[in-house]
Image 1 (spheres, rainbow, N blue to C red):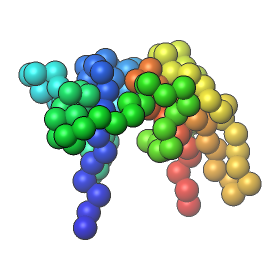
Image 2: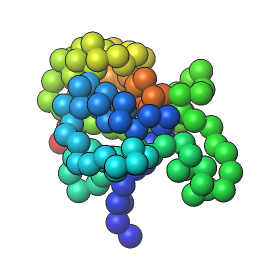
Image 3: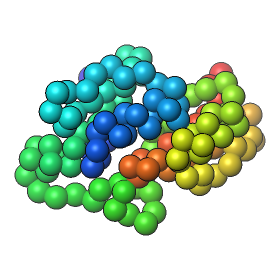
Length: 129
């Protein structure tokens, strides 16, 4: 078994891709001509976005959309970077909501938490090890 991808279901795939490009400096891998699916360059494991209609069609029923909940869903996208405070400030300037400012944990890792306009919970963290 190999972890292949994470797909975040959103209302506007292009807007989510653009936000992640501005906020986190990630590069777009592609956006399907239909606008219903897109991916970012994130290494071996893809971070992708798909429209809610695609998800509902695949699942055959509804689900809780991340942007519909007052609180973030109980899952996150983790992005490692060397300068968490700078990355946090860039993301907030791009439109993210800060949920937890950068802080150094007892094990030495610096982390911060943000909520993206599409509802996605993102952890920014320094690499471990």
